[in-house]
Structure formats: structure tokens, C-alpha cells
Image (tube, rainbow, N blue to C red; front, side, top):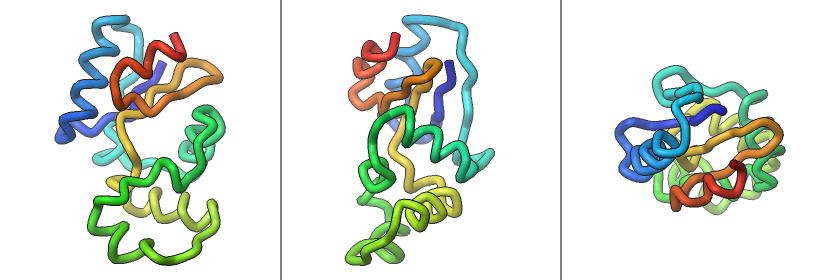
Length: 112
């Protein structure tokens, strides 16, 4: 399993704590610090079944300045998230062929 985590985010910390209650066998990815590739984002989108737009944090300044009110393709949104990882909702947890946005943390139960 993998968790895409932002340690500065309360919801992400709650998701990580919930995951740690269930298992210790996972890879922690601080995607804010390490970055996230377009390929990883495509994998997340595919495995969650959500669209790029559904995974956007719309309260972020970058969203309000660069994206809000524009009609962007998935490819353009994926590039925007890769360029500014704070735009990705968190935490995202991947288990094999499935993934969830773990807010609330109990969403993790859907892929265990």
C-alpha cells in the first residue's frame, strides 16, 4: 500500500493515523516535498475512479488564481496538480488496483 500524505494537513494526518491502526505495511509518500508525477496522478485517477477535477482542492490559492472559472481538460488539470501538488486532495491511499481519497479516514475500509 501507499499513502500520499501531507504532514501539515490535519485530514491527511487523520488518514495516516487510521491507516497505521490497520497496518504498518505501507509506503509513505510526502508528495508535497517529493513532488508527484503526471503518471502517478493518472494512476490515482484510474484507481479511485474519480476525475482530475474531483481530486482538486478548490480552496487553494493556486486553484482560485489559475483554474477557477476555466474549462480545462483532464490533461491540463493533471499538469496543474503535478506543477502544484498542494492542489491534490489528501490523503490518497492506494492498495493494489484500488485507491481512495481517505477523507473521512474510514474510506480506507473500501479498499482493504
